[in-house]
Image (cartoon, rainbow, N blue to C red; front, side, top):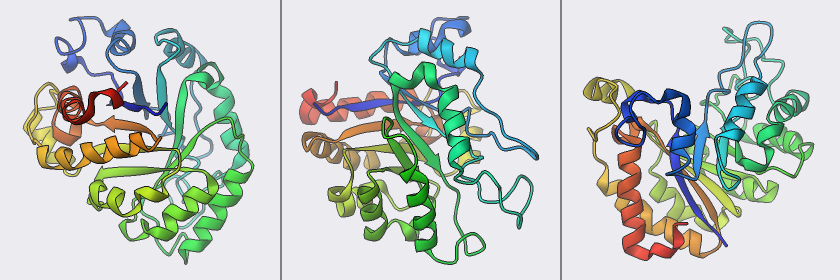
Length: 288
């Protein structure tokens, strides 16, 4: 049975106390979070690339995340930018030697082994790709295909691109052929996800990730004072368009991960309440 899993991008926000957490309970945030949601995005291991090496997850941290969540909980994990940043640390010309390096990926997977059964999707986030990196899109496709061909098939992989012009039929067809999930980003001046789903949803694999992120981080941080407990930039119009599309895709058998960022409207938990209501009004049974 397909599911729509809705959660947030990270969970470590003191301003969510009295919203989803008990006051002064930082040590048990994730355990409390997992009582309300069945998924969360981990982005803390993304920023890994250094000048002469890269960082991997601390095993004690990984074990604690496993201990704090039930067996049905699912993590969507951003893979290290050591794998997805084309240029070396601090350089605009020297290639990063760990870019799409399978050995580095296997080391990362090994560090995550305590969470293996709870990983819903491993996400590769690429920044805007220009001609100094790849002269043509198909060169990037070739390197991705080679990389995914040597990874274990026991995990689900997903790719996020921030090149709006590249998100076309060729791209989604390529992902489907590789059995790699698309990551759709609402924000950063990308094309609205409702348009992409309408145009290419039939090409999606068995699962995909939707990240509700927002555009102007500086504006919403100033408006909210980084107290993430109220909506300061409502986007009801977008949510009303997205919700029925998610229902339709779930009915077709897709597994969907919706990751909501505080920067989308000002408070991820409050955005989730609205989205769940919209999904419930349309057809409650698809939200598990």
